[in-house]
Length: 57
Image (cartoon, rainbow, N blue to C red; front, side, top):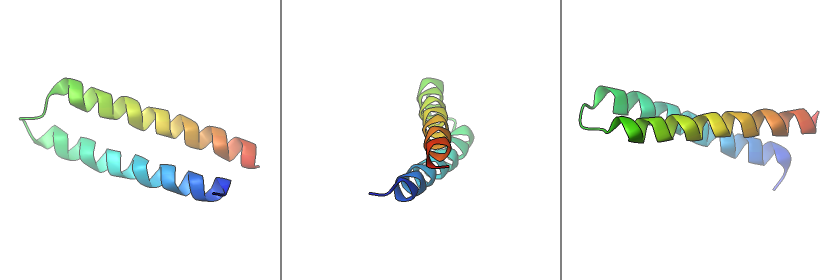
């Protein structure tokens, strides 16, 4: 897997989490801790994407 492909995969997962977080915020049945965990994972993905982009340049 190339770095660009890996970045693309991570970006897609980041976008999916963003949508899931937005949907969970509208659903009052979703636990705040679950939303917090999704946000933490999203931030981790963002950091990994930035790290890979920096090494690819």
